Image (cartoon, rainbow, N blue to C red):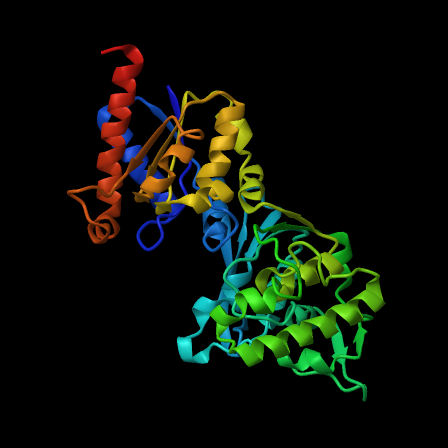
Length: 380
């Protein structure tokens, strides 16, 4: 019997690989001869790089770059097991997690470090990239990233603008003559579930600015700055980012990628499953187990278990969900996607206990669930 173990991370307690190992341990406690395939996955957000590297036996390369405020840090990019594909998380160099609450200021924060990561990978001769756009601290439209790759942003006097979201308000001309030529011969795939446009009431500044430290006045200025940026980009490229779907991701960096990298944008989980050849792995599987920290209504919007379940349904393979917690109000809707739904938390296990003892509880729950599944299947 072949069982695919494809969980996401259990946020705050287990990485996706640790969750898969806990599931495997539980199954093997019941029957050590069961063939388990560990395929830790993610939905394109934070944790995607590690999940893809773990699932493909790849590696992480660490490089010296700038954080969102220009301070030196080490940031990693992943190289998948094929030795050709890079996975770069925007948050590695430009993430909110790199700043304290008092340091969060999207007027000043820059995506320059992410551009440096890309440049390092290009220098190492990689030409195929998967970009995860979640968790950014920036609202600079990806301008800092572009600056790190040779682009210049000039004001009316021809002076170069400082990095950060605020300066774009004075943008009058983009000089892309020294933009890294290797970009044009490279492939970029954006793993992103954000559909927000570049500017406006549902744009990058209005929707995501406040969580990055922007006041209501800052939001207005940042939106005007991105509008000015979009105007100049349209003059240069003929591409209108203003209302472009997904352009508002990562503080507008989704727009920069679409305008200057010739990239494609796909739902995060679909990109991840394709990168690990998930369809090929499940062809001969008898059962799939997936899970996440908390399953709720957002799961049905394209989170990891939903994407895994779509493949299971297409291949007519039974699928069981085991998550840290399950929103009971969503259970009925979820049952259309999963054969069984289980949670680590119940009347005897609190959320705090589930987080603290996640590996043991997931191992124990998986053993019980799998044993019951086998017994019901053979009619014992």
